[in-house]
Amino acid sequence: MKIKVKKKRDRILVKVKFSSTDQISQRELNILSRGSRDFLLPKKLRHKAILFSGKQGVPLNRFLKTPLTRYEFYFIMAQIADITRKIESNELFLHNIILDLRYVFINQTTKELQFLYLPILSNHVCVDVRGFMESVIYAATFDQNGGTDYVAQFADFLRNMPQFSSDVICDYIQKREKNIVNRIGRGSQSGFFTDKPADYYSHYGVPGGSEDTCLLQNEETTLLSDDSGEATLPNEQGYSDSEETVLLDDEATTLLQDNDAPQKENPAQENRYPYLIRVSANEKISLCKPVFRLGKEKDSVDYFVYGNNAVSRAHADIVTRGSRCFVIDCNSTNKTYINDREIPPKIETEIHDGDILKLANEAFEFHLS
Image (cartoon, rainbow, N blue to C red; front, side):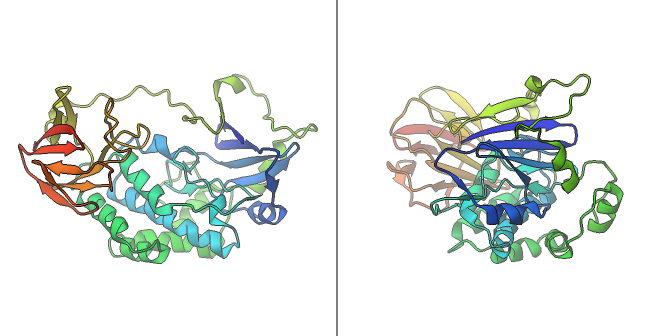
């Protein structure tokens, strides 16, 4: 399967070309074609391809590079939990939704998510919604104003939940940010659709009046195909397809390349965080997130432990709550130790200034800020 993404003015276009063994479900395609704020809108093309369109947004992995507020964090989590209920209520299948930070899009003004759902007949594969929510936590940066204890507490709540439940998660969030669950409820129950931004913001209670709305307008999709069935865009002065197109295959690791220059960390701020010293390399590692993961799976951890095969892919988390820090072993193969004492998996163990943390045989000195 190959995916081609174009960003054009106020729209995102995602063309998915399926393999010869994939079979498109006309029933699911018809359901998605009715239009929804939550899913990219599909249009079937020739040669086993579908063109999906949505209003302006960016991939979630890019958005998470900017510090999240408490409200934004809970709103994103509530939408991820709630999408499972919407899939069920629309007689769709959870295993067909793409839960990947590169393929979920977020409107930067409304903070609403748009999901890519593939209407295909496929083998039932378990989709790890809880794992996807955890990946958001590990990938995100957070606004430090007012503290970030709520992030670690939510991570604990997810980890200790016996089984995934959208209702339980939304109840948890409602107790902390009531307006978020109410807003999702209005969006999913009212059936209000419009292509007029002012009406949209007024109805859903979103502050501001930007043209950045993530609603889908059905009429627009008729402009996106030519007689050959291939997706095209009207040519306009100054636009070049090659400048904004990224072709992805199953091994691809990037989407809509981010050309923004990375922001330099303020040294004064860095000193406020706890940190590790990797003994073998004399390397300083700033624990700059409420939940900080260490391991050798380069694409899914906050610190990649290179050059040591004894370390597990996701070996351990360090959770920061105010002035205290805790280590959680993630069921690693070769165990986690504090001052040469093995700690139990999946249970928080407090670590203190000057302690020696070991992931298998890899030693780190722990220091508070």
